Amino acid sequence: MIALLDRGAKISTGYDSSYATVNEAAKSGNIETVIALLNRGANITAARSGINALHCAAAYGETNMCRFLITLGLNVNSLDRDGRTPLHFAAEDHHTDTAMVLIENGANVSQKTLYGTSPIDLAKGNHRLLEEMRKHVSSCTVQ
Image (cartoon, rainbow, N blue to C red; front, side, top):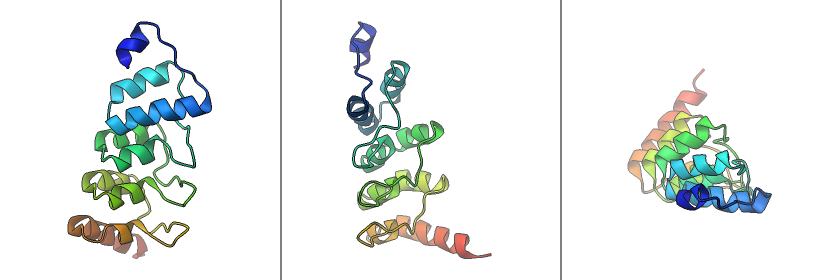
């Protein structure tokens, strides 16, 4: 993609086009491509049904991309239309390292979806992640 952009290819900076291009780059974990897209006017906050680049990177276990997107200001607790956060996506697909980065950056491990499911519920079967989430819940509730 970068080669095409370097040869003068234009990206549409419209909302849907930014969503598609940035989110595809986020899924691939290619930070260089995301930077190139942003330098050419893509919208990093574009979302469809509430799903943004951070949701996509989390779903694909792209830990470094998640770190990068967080530095750009994407909200670790942003909700899609079903009330899912990026942590829901990471936990559901058992991307432990990605989930831990989200948690370290303030992701709410207890956030429930519209259907009542929390990231903790989705981490069942992933003992390491579940243990870390439970520690986080305990440390947040102790005054």
